[in-house]
Image (tube, rainbow, N blue to C red; front, side, top):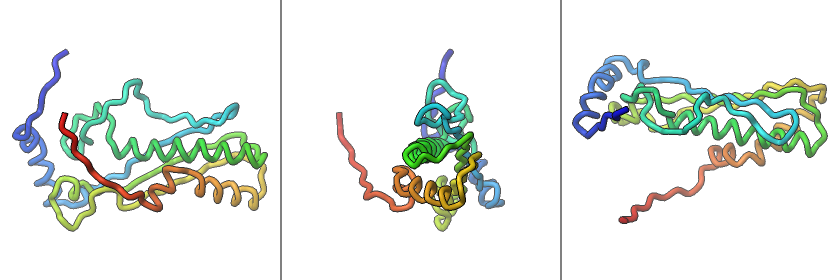
Length: 174
């Protein structure tokens, strides 16, 4: 199977109609991405629904990608779901709060006009991220509140998103 190599000109040609569309209709550039996971009942783990055996990142279709590769935005939400799910399971285990079942859902809103440079006022990255826990448990409201409070507190990905880490970019020639 041969792969098509896309150079800058091909990429511009691929994205030009999308950029034009987003200039005309800003709502066409907005999407809500989702990731979903299920708490493992037997061990401290979270099963992610990715549907892919090999992770290969590429452009999202709204930026000219084929849709065959993973979008980094999806991967970010999947990382949040995985971390929150594992943390929730660890905390529920530590607090002896039995969960018959649990689902973790993350949704994030993106406006691709920012990513594609169509609108300099549009943000690059997620405008909002929502994390939802659906729990089947006999735990009291007080126990659930404590479970969620500690899950938020100890979920590395959630805390990194809530309190952004100092970031830097470095280039190394090889």
